[in-house]
Amino acid sequence: MELEWLNLLMDNPDFAFIFVDYTGKIAFINRTYLNILGMRQEDVVGKNVIDILPETRTLTVIRTGKAIIGYNWTVNGYKMIVSSLPLVKNGKVLGCFAYGLFLDRWDERAKDMAENLIRELNMYKSEIRNLHSARYTFNDIIGNSRAIQNVKFLAQQVALRSTTTVLITGESGTGKELFAHAIHNWSSRSSMPFVRVNCAAIPENLLESELFGYAEGAFTGARKGGHPGKFELANGGTIFLDEIAEMSPTMQSKLLVVLQEKEFERLGSSHPIQINVRVIAATNRNLKEMVEQNRFRGDLYYRLNVFRLEIPPLRERLEDIPAIVKALIPKLNTCRRTTVVGVADETLELLQKYSWPGNVRELENVLESAIILADMEGARNIIPKHLAFMGSKLDYEYSPVGASLKKAVEEFEKRYIARVMQDCSFDKKKAAEILNMDLSWLYKKLKKYGIPTGK
Figure 1 (cartoon, rainbow, N blue to C red):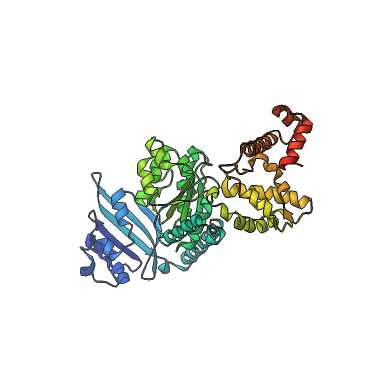
Figure 2 (figure 1 turned 90 degrees about the vertical axis):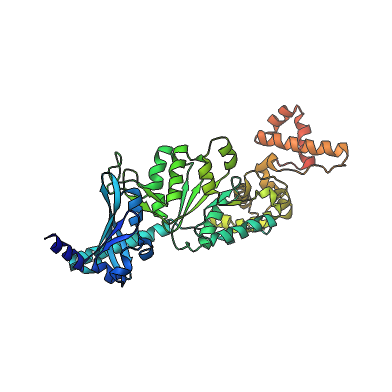
């Protein structure tokens, strides 16, 4: 009787199955599966499963001892719904039994239902790609300075290596996210999702479910059917972990496992999910220093720091400011519905004298405010007075070495008065009190040095 049942399994045209032992060798395979493969039993049995089925999940099941249920599997054009189950005896995994049912063998009602589900799944995939897509390319990274061109070249090279993990470092506002988008769009993964996660913006108790998703019933209020995490949504594409330095030690450990094993489990689930995703991480912190201070895992740092891109601050490429300004003005005009044409030369000179601690993001904010002020006056160009709100932020050049004492004192006086005016929100009376100066004398100094007065 047992032999009869075995023969039925062997010959069943709707049912393909395979046994793999704990070493990864194929111990048994039925005729249906052999016909799909177009191979003979002697060519398969005893061989390592990875040599016959390179994308197999049986080895994952053997390694973890956990089943993988109901995944799509296509071999030589045959579509199946497959489950892989561990074979366990006395707590030890002896192998894996994997079986598949053919979609094209189901009755018409089942086929229609399966096809509808597949169409719906593809629709959701399309929506996810539209929602999680990279918006910027390397053309959006403006500048001809050697500093930025060198980084762009390196970024384009690593983009072509679609499995390489990238760590982007640099001060806030330098454009780390732009580079992450551009790398994705330049790579072979560009048609797949680009998913951004701000590790600092998500509370620690929610970050695990945000990254890895959760199963139905994982916690009170969990959505019916569970919920996919960011890694799952990014499968095949890129996940961008912004502000990675803010991740807690517990989450650092879990992320390390994902990077090592290329798989994870949803919160509350015991079924591993395999992923093929490129990881790009970014931070404005010194991770190496944090490792030395035991505030960041060293093993995770080395996993992330496979290829590092250091984005230069704006103060190291001030020659790029005219080009950046030229590119930003049309964008800001569209956003604010203004009609400013350009920037006066003397305004550009002022912008190039400032150290820009907020980098390109700060420059964009400065221009946005200046454009609004200029448009309110009906001006076509931004002139220095439209930067009045910056007050002492404008970093006037120091007198060159060798200048007279009088010149050096005047430079200091100009900078100091401008700073006080800014701190007082351009209240001249209050500024005169702080400076211990007669108000009329302050007016003369403001006029003499051309210091912005906020009006």
